[in-house]
Image 1 (cartoon, rainbow, N blue to C red):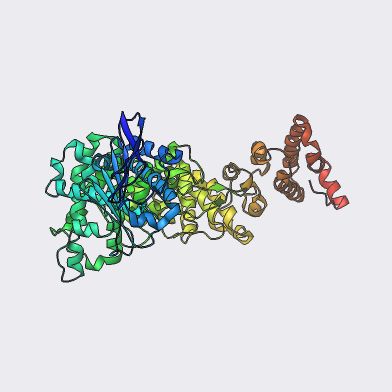
Image 2: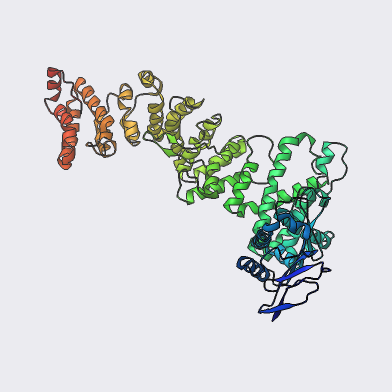
Length: 624
């Protein structure tokens, strides 16, 4: 039971007004009479105004004020005194009650947020916070807060905006917490930190605080030049200490371990920036300086830990591992293996196309750069992308061989996607990479498909020599080579093809048509290069279901026009047997699919026994 006293008459000597709140109000001074109210509660928040005003500048029974006091006392778990300078109370006059309520609610919110963000600092703060003093000071121009022992002192200038400056209060809480940690940890080695202190130690040693703290905590030796300044950067020793601390955090729990990992991976950006901007001023390799010690510790840790990092961690490291320009840091990291793991993850995930969702998808963009295909199988992306891993791998002869060996054993679509990503990038090593692929593996055929679909008439330099060599040495791939030629070369190329490469045989033609409609639409272009002794029609008939999926659809137009052109050439060459074979296939198709009969009617008429004569007689211009 707490006794609550309200003084009815003030003694002139009274110099202090005390209101024991969330449930207790006391005006300290002289009184002739008093009334007593009893309120059940175990803790209290007291508010005192000194010197005491003639009358209370707020309603102590206000519901909002009572509720704020109650919640603040429950959050703290112990009593709290508010001492308010009367000069500040007079500043707001009739509005003081509003300022008082806002201050208590604001402090309540600030402490609640601190508890959510850093439970350890919250606990250490509220355990000792027993008193809040709000004072007017002629010596300060802006609000200032300090927290010593158990008292939070808030000094305010004339005409303050609010009774409590929450930013300054939060700074004061942090400052005290850091100073306490400083006294505990300054002489402690990472290996000696107790499990209960791991989080506090990490925050203390890693935090750059409010600007000055890092330099104060980690002062650099005086440097005569830029090289010495970089060499003596104490960040290196901090990194070394946190690397040594990391194994203990793994035992402690996943939350702290994750935070430490994120911090360490973030230091890769610091190291990359040093190499990019100040490479000429870096201290000699191997020198025993803070910077180099930190570099060795960090690079060793990354070599061990990146392979098992989560997507967010790996994505954070990606740009530093594969910089767009500048030297590479941490050469001990197996960058090729890093990228190949991401490529394998893309395959395992089902080869997803371009998306903007999550760290894992962004990693796939940075390594594979997956794209969709339009109707002509041209790569399409809605956002810029390039595989920094692929560019890195193609710039070294040993890595190119390693890449080719890896592609030979993987889904061929990986090869196709990677080569497609080079469309707007350097093509210098594309041909070299294809040379290194095993021509008996699916990846090789995928690479030829990429040459055909991606570059069109702008084949990378050296491609024609490569294709000519494949034509001569790998007969089983001639259909694939023909597909590249068909999609990348003009009509004039085919007039001299037979003289340079030899005529196209029936097997080669069939393998070309294995590529589907995109190969078929070029059939009339390469017609002059086909060996006169082979059937043009039989490969078409064998592939008709692929070349012409549904004659009734508008998309069938190009294939139907090619068939009309074939008929015209067969009529001109008096190839009655070929026409009869094509007519039989089309008639069977029309009989089986009633919906296609109208679309096939002209072709059926022209391939009939008298079709060529009728076409010549009527000079027919009909098109399917």
